[in-house]
Length: 161
Image (cartoon, rainbow, N blue to C red; front, side, top):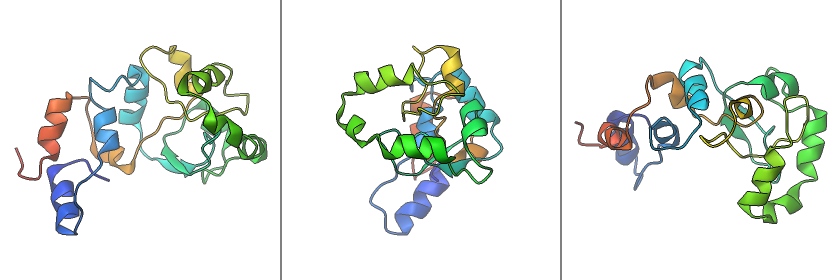
């Protein structure tokens, strides 16, 4: 959970050689994340771990809720049986190029348990926000705006502003 210079300093003091600040950079104007996705992230009051969007990518991932997670996840984030089975059988898809995986995303809907790990970008329809993974780390609870990448780097710099 890296969202500030204080977080960066703490990680470096604990022995890290660097940090990854994914959610902070998701919430930048340069990220190409769909603006409705960014607004959902900013409005979130919690995140949870799930494997729902594990088509060809079975590792747990942290997301905020949307129509797909409300339909296909239990309250604890565990994916229900149908998407778990689809995801378990999807490992050959991991070898497909990203463009092919993105075409699979166009088939999925909140009611259909076919959930690729593709996140909504600015070139996708707004409806994609309710049927794709809204990735977000727990730092969303401490981030309150979309800023420039330059401002994000300044906020994360361990020497402070």
